[in-house]
Image (cartoon, rainbow, N blue to C red; front, side, top):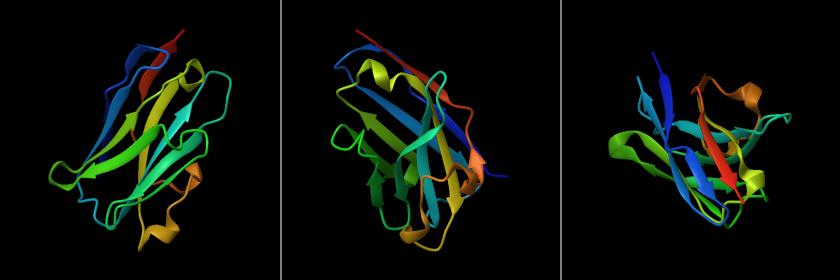
Length: 127
């Protein structure tokens, strides 16, 4: 049974940094897309970064490009999201989701395509 668990959320001031972790159990990630989503109050859930764990290919939404970095630790079956230059509009619940795919070209920000989800971790950025 595949399980996904996020950690690392918290409260920071604008301009600060946080690193989120997404640990997956019950499978190895070498043929999985792992995507970070976030959902702010009153807004739809949006994908912000993904990685294809088999190749390390990554992709970012424009709003986080250059500020956030997604990476992997295969030994720990964990995906990280290093977030820098945080701003109040980054405040949201951050979710990790994963789905098995043949290669990176099948990864996406489509929440309906994800197979396994974590419960989320809150990130709050204050001025």
